[in-house]
Image 1 (cartoon, rainbow, N blue to C red):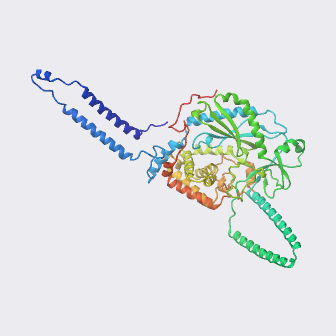
Image 2 (tube, helix red, strand yellow):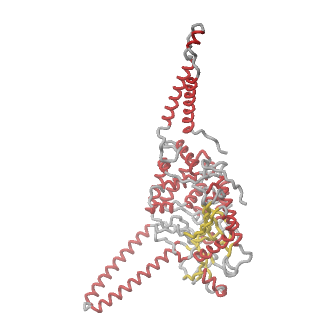
Image 3 (tube, rainbow, N blue to C red):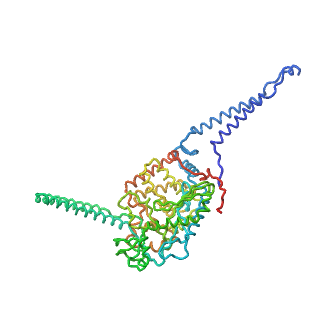
Length: 605
């Protein structure tokens, strides 16, 4: 229930104008009143007309004094009205926790908090459209040589986890798919060491080719020249110098390697869906094999989720091929259900960054408060026990570090735990006290992250958002929630919890690692409650030699970049009042409490 608060910036000028109007009306009424004539005064026993009463003059004087007092008080309270930042925000440095709390509360209520009315109606509209879409594409019989929709969808992301910041204009939907009948795939985890070794192997092969080419060129030049002896001596001397330099480099590397006692954490493991090449099903369904599968050489590392270790060539299900099938399949389903929605909004389907985006642009107030929404559709392959595989997002693969760059020809999938994350968030919601600030803390930190990206160039903004992504912030927030008692998350401890989360992020940046909740080894899995059980496939895969080396969400990012992000984050928290004043928040109509509009379409027909 919202509580009304008096806006002093509006009250004092309005009250001053009312008093001024009363004084002006009184003077006009006094001047327009009829004055007695002198003849009438002489007739009344020679008495003259009496002057204005003393009480009326005193009232005028008091009104003038009150008017001046109110004007002086308004000017002293608000010395400058012209501000560049959003109206109503404090421009004073918050020296105490009380002033910082007022600053955070005011910014949250005006620019961060989303209207439950808008969020609820947006979710209903998206669920209605996607439900009709997957219902049309569902098949009752499993296809023999193609993929198909399973008929349901999963709502994931910050919009459904109630910590969305900005506007409820983006929704993530997982669309589960069915594999062909009779096709058996072997999921296998791919750890960071395999990718790195594959890249090193490629570089070694290219160097060997270059060396052999140079040798051929040298022999040809020697044949054309008569100075064979001198050239051979020079080449031998150069080779000896190179061998000496290589030996010195190898010994120095060994010495540096001996100094490192703890192994570096690897990245979050990826997964591949493999099919042995001798399967009889592949020979019968050659069209599916040529369209969706690609033959890969035997891997050097990697553990199969079914217990086998890959040692021969195998076919892998290609995410790019699945996306190429998924895009026209959604187009056909959208063409079937488009007509009832085209009367109220326009629908457009695009494919970018390995994600299929369905954009809804309202024609009228069909979509609540005229919000243009984007629905990101991700094809998902279920592995059982609430575990799904989705195509890797190319926007997350940046050129920040070429050492851990994931190549597209690896045909790797990203693991998703929607059921486990929803179960964990539900357990935390029941654990914290009623009216807690745990969701507000995450929203404010994400808003501070967005404010800290100001005044950065394109490369700096990409680095900033790659390091402090929404999933990283949510992981650090969950670790803080699981490691602290629930009593400290009351509404009165808002500033302290925001400061704790920022301090926790800075500590993780200094350690160069933030552990994945389900792949971070014992440091993360021991924090999980008993109600959240890891899938059996993940337990078996992490029980091997790679269990303690994977799960770092910042793997491959240079330490210097992490130090820059840590310093920028500290600056953003210290000078939060200045960043808020200089910011230009872009809000759509109907977002927050100030811009709420009534939606005429409470339900979709």
